[in-house]
Image (cartoon, rainbow, N blue to C red; front, top):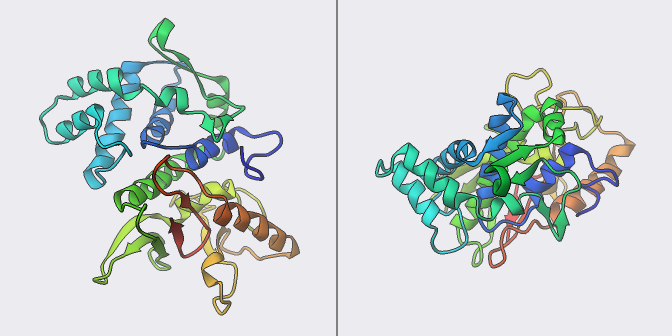
Length: 298
């Protein structure tokens, strides 16, 4: 795994974020699975039948298919075709759950913990499909769910999912996409030639995981929940007059102030986010996320 995002003794939060933001993707199923595990965490049950996991898993994919049809790098998917038919009312909810349990988890269960050439040292579930017909959430998952950062994780998953599907949908093998940051609306968006735009995701949600949910200046926990007392502020760390003005957006407390230590932190963070590309598929471009006005795909 990559340094310095993963510590010598990785935390549960860092392992989860590595899975979401640094895992290799040929489909968006890993995001759908992550979102489903978060959703099912409130039930408190360690064992999850595949049929019970199939319901939120297929629901999340159906929602994303409504606004971004490309959720896989291969040309066809029988499972996704069933999701599309469900969106059109041609397949019942029960039929979709049965199809999902049969086809939707073929690879993602095995691949979920894979980051680069190995698995994360912390596992969030064990595969018990052959013996019990489901998966078993680990103690580490429940400890993760009890942590202060857990409430930020759904937005981080959604942000990463939106960024990846945008890259695939725009055929990034032949194009270079600059995603702009709307200072007033707080959104990352794709500018079009006709002056219109396509919103991609919240800037806070996209950046928070890369800062491990910490204020860039004081390293104390921040939140990306809109009503939270510690809601993160998007701050331009470097002055706009500098030539490289696009590389200085960070999350902080509203009254956060830089210190001498912050410059070292900026160097480490910028190196990770701008030069450490994140693979999203074997034959499609990579996505490189920076804490900045632009996010470069290419």
